[in-house]
Amino acid sequence: MVETALRIRFALNRGLAIVVTGYTEGDVIRHSEIFTPLRALDLRVGRVITVLEEMGIFLDDKEPFFEQWLVERLEGIAPGIAAETDRWTRVLRDGGPRSLPRQRATVRLYLNRARPALLTWSNRYDHLREVTREDVRAHEKTLHGHHRMDELVALRSLFAWAKRSGLIFRNPTSRIKVGQIEYSVLQPLAPDQIGRSVAAATTPATRLVLALAAVHADRVAQIATVMLDDIDIGNRRLTIAGRVRPLDDLTLKLLLDWLDTGASAGRTQPTSTC
Image (cartoon, rainbow, N blue to C red; front, side, top):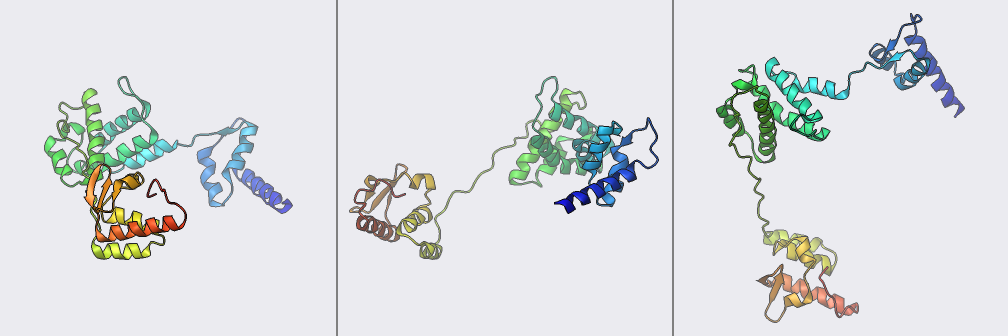
């Protein structure tokens, strides 16, 4: 502990000796002046700053993270488009006369999603007003799924703001529908997949749940609501989520195994399969 304290004191004194070299009364020591040399020597900047603040000679002129991030994100975009996008991003963050401020994560997402299209258009345009509906359509065709939805939402926001601000005459994204992502329908597993999966299950209950999910493509929430009254062994029928379906050989066998296990454990009146 003592050794650690001595090392901290030594490093702090070394850092202070570096940053106050050439200091004269009335001067201020800026963050931008000391950060790089101290970090190059692997010295803790925070401790040195604390002492300088106590002395009243420190000026925090470091650029906020948002400003640095914004400069990086706009790099490579045509100056005119970049300036307009800069204004839009700040309105997203701070809000405006007819808009509420967005969360920081949303601001980052919007600009990150709009950036690929802006970089492409920067190869031939200088301002947003030059972008046409055909340009948006052409870019849209290169996108799929979530990427298409996210980029269109961001671009619609950008051009809607530009239209309200009088930067463009027509909104090239108007009447271009974002749409919804179509999720694939759950499908039963193939017989060989079911066999391997059932063999991997270790208890009758897990094997039964696995069969209901794999063979009948039932969801967990639906399986959890199955009652004994929903099972008609005599007629080999099973009712799940209001839908009656036939009991296949595998599911019937696993169901009987589970019932036998429950009976042997004294659970003669189970109320659910889960």
